[in-house]
Length: 262
Image 1 (spheres, one colour):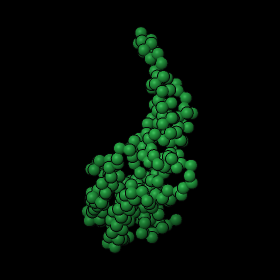
Image 2 (cartoon, rainbow, N blue to C red):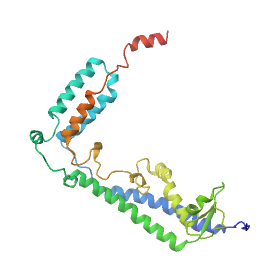
Image 3 (cartoon, rainbow, N blue to C red):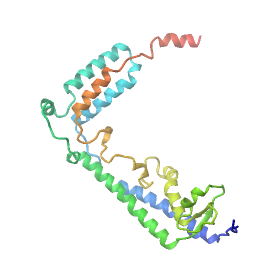
Image 4 (cartoon, helix red, strand yellow):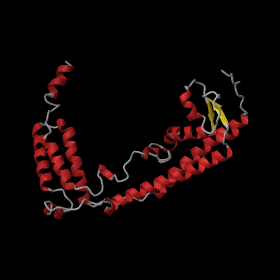
């Protein structure tokens, strides 16, 4: 096996390549965050009927998950009321749709929902705010610093990390711990999330939209899809409530506490 002598890096690489790439990526992430905020459309205010239509489902789910904290009589009264209201469509915003519930109708078009369109436009703007800066950064690093070796990791790694850490450097005999300029860019791209959280707080948009990769672009506030049949959701929730059994967790809680601390 050929013995490769250890590399000695010029300190200028640290001062003029390593730190500048790190600093530029932090600044670009902060700039991306504020650009994303400027591009986002303000959420439209829902009318009271639309809010009631959405929150009633949350009320049913809350009863199923937290009903064990209220007495059996209170749980039963709420259960009967919600089941009847859901089946009769009391909370529906469009009462005309309830009258024509037995008529066949075409599947709802999500694009016809203004709220869904706003969500998709905001998603598109966020993706553009991510793609354009990342493309420019990759072009800048690839043009000026292509093939640069910047640092050596202080811990051993397996050969499987070679393609990750030495992107753009075609040297099969080089120790896997050496990191190239392009790999340094990718490490910062996926590793600066905590730095952005410290600077900008949580739920920021500086991370390049990685946290949005698994989001559904059609998802609306409250976890509802645009164009969903609310009456069918009510019937499903009513069935779930009917199947929910009640076990009061606070039964004889006073006696249990006194017995515990006697």
